[in-house]
Image: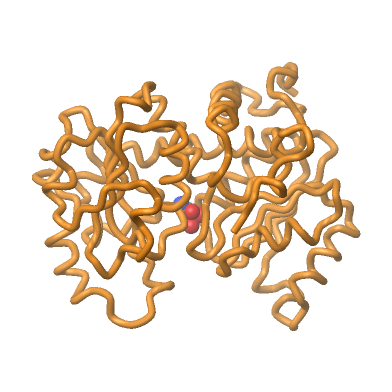
Length: 326
Ligand code: CP
């Protein structure tokens, strides 16, 4: 859907961040390295650097969000940018204003960046083709297509625990069919050179062309978890399901829910991840979600540093020039 002709400027730098697909390993590593240098900002007494002072960022969330919207807002504030949170429910969109007209209205307010979540796959890409040349667009999740900053904060979390991607077996478990997170994760994991990416799901929740993504497919949870280093659980995306794809949530949990017993199949130091929001007792047991191997809340914290890195890079700012705290 998205070529790098639109994501990168003529010098190969990140202009928009729409998908992890097709980006080079060095660019993904650069995002992670820059995020590492931003991570300490949140631990300072004054949690601010002046890197995007004077820039105006609009958060445009046409779908609900807790983690992504708030961490983008915090990331913008920590970079000293001004941020607008457009409330779509009370905006002119509810009176029939088109997406293009909303964008052009915000452009007239001299915005420099749009952070976009939308139910339609391709929405962020479309917006990137419509905006003025100085504006950057960051995809905060479009339909079932991509969620690239989620993938990168997950890569950051993995790298903090297990620095050598080339030794890792990663299992992604659950609703692959409807998951924009799974697609972005698979592209990022492959580019960063993991040993093996497995997906574990019932037949009804796996896309038809999944083998083309370079993953090993399992339908049995115990077999799929055997010897993995990272277990990444996914939410059942009921809002995107048409028709009955599962007998019941109870039965799904019996076959694909992550319990302490099931986790014994993975390596003893395996970490447990989930992009959130989690559905306890549907895809993951509370014992595991809150257990010592869970890094779910670390994922949330890392979202701020990774989003700071992506925002700075798309605005052409280098974190090494961030300067002193405000
Ligand atoms: N992981 C994620 O995208 O969560 P939110 O829907 O809360 O933003």
